[in-house]
Image 1 (tube, rainbow, N blue to C red):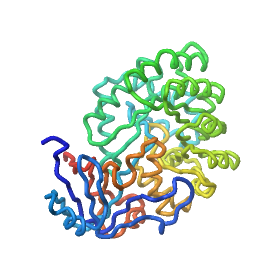
Image 2 (tube, one colour):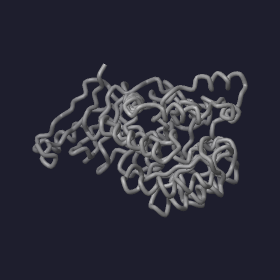
Image 3 (cartoon, rainbow, N blue to C red):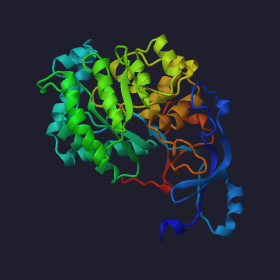
Image 4 (tube, rainbow, N blue to C red):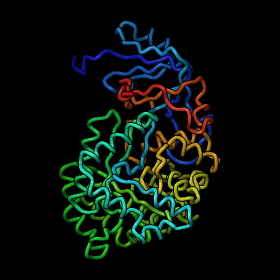
Length: 420
């Protein structure tokens, strides 16, 4: 049967369904602003939502079309599929020694200077086989999918040379064809200047501009370019050169900024980046500048937990009028936990975020960070990506601080099953 002749499907009834529709793009949110449909159903076909409404009414309205009914016996609450806008899932090795040293009082930069940090992962990732890296990536992405993340951004950045970065982007692309979730690749070849590069930072970036980015563009390995603007990585002037070149090739821009020092936000705003990610050390003037822009603030509570650092000031960012999303930052060094919902609930507690703000940050506003307008929301025309949690009240999800996991996952309207 061809897709154009696939029957309608009605899935439900859901005791509650949060559409995440009709919410402002920026600023704070109250739970009362959430559109909650009671005893809801979703009409979908060809992987797209056609209508959201009351389940019984949809069944009567479309009865003549002979829809397939996916009937739910158990009490279930539905949300759009979760979106993780910032991860580093493609790596080999482990950095438990870094974590031990941090507990003994060593800082992240100190560990990097003595052979740990990003370079340790680069060394291990370079030596790993394509098969091993792909299997590790698939394993991590499947764990994300089981936790309700139907769209997951994945960065390169652990090879730090043109050929190696292309290899990682090819692995991300290949892995994405073998699992049900969507993997959104980002080129992070400008993670740090590699220690084995005989030249300065700008010379390394010039090689990326001349030898890597044209291939990434031509082969369509990614339409996103990221750079780490930080002491020990790249300065603002160096990063601006790189971002201008990438923008000229048509790439969307992303900045790792304000994790330890300032400068990244101003650059992200100046270059009209899609997002600036981290923001643990952001100051009031940068918050104001970010709020006045369309750049999404992506905060990463997993890195704060992993490093023992303060959380990004999510409450201040929202109150100032920023569009705020939350990513897991799952990586082997600073954020090894990788559980987006747990991290969201923890951040929400400490930053006094409403449930609406937390849920928007991992659905519709996370979609904004990735420049995706077809997901993170359940309405006519959106992807039929939705997840079902056990229970009758959506508030139970964050009340249990992320430990309540979805029992049903649909990707483009198809139920996802997992091997034991």
